[in-house]
Length: 427
View 1 (cartoon, rainbow, N blue to C red):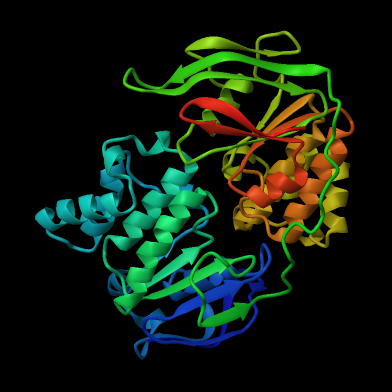
View 2 (view 1 turned 60 degrees about the vertical axis):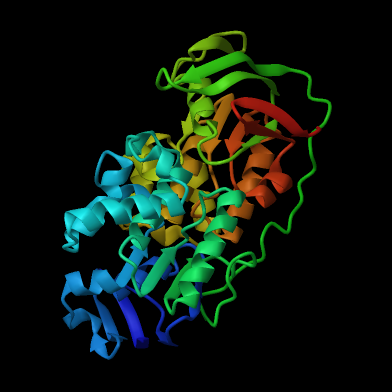
């Protein structure tokens, strides 16, 4: 069905490792490798977006010679950098747009759009503005759009990084049925997803590391309160409050993690703490003062929106950070420093955005899903940096769906559920 022979993908002067692969209907393929190893590039070559050496054939036809519309009707791609693939304003329009491009009739477009939104548990959000969704909800929407055309092959590029555990189990059931119907799945990752479907073929690009071998010592006896959140309420519309009376404190030098389902308000809470949003009621105090932009550093989940330099070296010069440049060189990624920013992988951009923010040594840093896009080696390195920086009395508050990372590198873990916070990990 899908065959890669001596395939190497080209992006400018960069060439990927050689891949040989022969996939039949109903099989699962895992492409595993560290950040920047070429996983996304291989998937993009399969859908005809990137040039390649060697051969990629679908049912005997060379991909580079196929009509792109015909190709996209048979192969669906779910990107890791999902924000760059969202086109429309409303949730249902995002799914419909994909179907319209492939020439579906209007009646079928509405039926299929509603069907796939119900399948991915987004139906109640059908009329929502796409840009008000959480990152996990956006990721589910992109998967819904991909499944709407009933493709023979689905390419999943680190497609569950923002999705909570409950929804991951739902997608496992969806894709089991998808395979039973004779369809094929190709997914990328930093290791084989044990909770996902067992792959029939595994392609390794470079060395892989086990996840979070290091367990950091949790800081205890912290008494100097830096942040106070008191009876915090927030809503975007009159219909529904996202936050419903949030109370908690964070201490100077603490590493505090907030977990919760997609759409529970984690990102909203971080933006209020950093002064980007104002609460509907209640109050936030940092060192007994109202938050202001610049008082604490906010690191968004999508690194692209916080990077302004043409290259990583230029970006880091904005914050006068030779410290960050040295870290990049020490981990063997010095070649990234002078690459165009737009050519970096999601994980590479994530690394630059984190190091740039940490270089500022603010009293408080809030980080939204800091490990998304990072392989296990880089996530471990970032976790150790968090540990060292917190020992310099910098307070770090982060949200994550990566429970292993939270357990390894947090002093406390809070659960945000139904608009309120519960402490589930004692200091």
